Amino acid sequence: MRRFILILGLVAMAWQAQASDYDIPVLRGSSPDVPTPYVPAPPVYVGWAGFYAGVQAGFSRAGVDFKSSLTPLISDILRDTTIEPDVLGFHVLGLTDDTGSYNVGGFVGFNTQWDDVVVGFELNYGHTNLNKAASDTESRSFINNGQAPPNTTYQYNVSVTGSTSVQITNLWTGRIRAGWVVDGFMPYGFVGGAIGLANVFNSVTITGTRTDTVSNNPPTTTVLDLPGTVTAGQGNAPTYGYTGGLGADYMLTPAIFVRGEWEYIGFRDVKSAKVNINTFRSALAVRF
Image 1: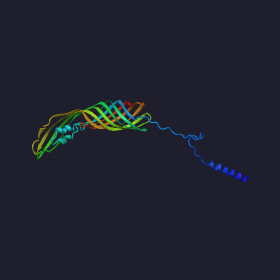
Image 2 (image 1 turned 180 degrees about the vertical axis):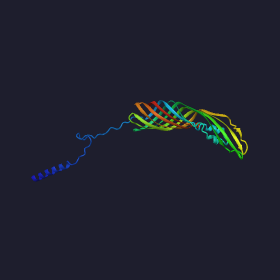
Image 3 (image 1 turned 120 degrees about the vertical axis):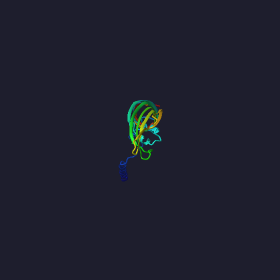
Image 4 (image 1 turned 45 degrees about the horizontal axis):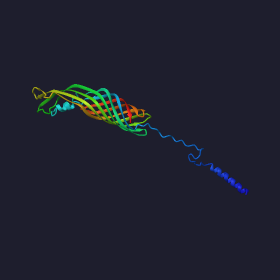
């Protein structure tokens, strides 16, 4: 009997030592002696979703390229003549110059948000007074025998005097925006389309002579029969282009934010002139 009790004791001691080598799982909260694992709080994102509207003010700088602005008038004056291609090669206003003006307006938009990413659409309006004018004269001599009889040379001496002016007053852009939330800041970029209203005035005067030289005969010179000064103009002419830029919004309160922005607008055809506009502005806006 004593041997049996001794054997049971030894078996119990061995079992206890073996069981101590294993961790027994314990359900969370089942024992006050087991600490609860750390669970991080869910991230908090500053909310930019929803509608918003604001006012803005800044400064615009426009570069104007007049090199092709007189082409339609020159072509109209010399239509159906053999010298039209020659004179169209003149660069009377081979000029690219800058002008600046204020830019004030407003905007409305809507944002959607996924965590730190914000995507939205915005309509933006700016009123400005970008005004640029140029004028010059170019003269050339050239031979064109397209209508000359045999053994006859036609030499032309032609002068083109031209002037032009472009005034851009109103700008609208429709933008797709994408931003990244960094605490209260939201830097963003945008691309879209642009519409502008421009007052355009062009004037062209072409004068010249033709000297006919026939073999072994004295040359004779005649004045070209041309209509004189021709003008064309249009007020509030619509023009279309594209836009892109960068900016940053900063939330002052959950309902109010401020903005700093650079915007580029390119117009490829403002009545044959090319205009690009850089605008730097600040803004104040309200979220709804």
